[in-house]
Length: 187
Image 1 (cartoon, rainbow, N blue to C red):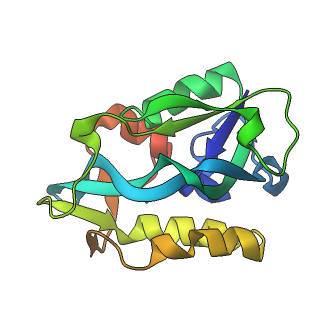
Image 2 (cartoon, helix red, strand yellow):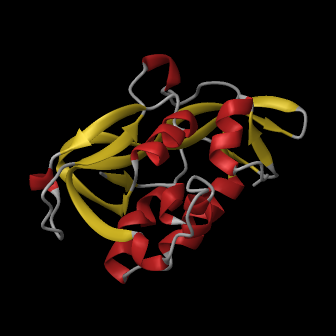
């Protein structure tokens, strides 16, 4: 089975935290171009900055027939899938049809995690919502390891942020989610 990563999973160091039983290599993160989706800042996760609990806003994808996005595909085992479900507990597991993948000829569809629950989708102007600056850095660091076309596809999300950016180290408020996301490490 293949997982589609469109945010922090494009960063091999960040992705490695979700794959505890193997060492990821650069070639394990296969760049893919997907039709029918766009990246948006609207996924809410309860996070802790120092001792303050806030709504962290993270990248999400949403259907948009006129768009395409780049990301990475990572071959995963059933066990890794179970860990990822903990990390992405507020996301729904969706299927991306193999026909919607431009640059890879696959025998199977991809899976991805997308926020679909209304109470976990941030609305512009919503209070106590912040994009963690460290998360932006993680995604930017990952993106620069790919082609110019891949990098250019991320440019729009790195400008005109729809929520205030918050500096500092954060952890997920949910201890199980935090363990799955960071392998007991703080970002």
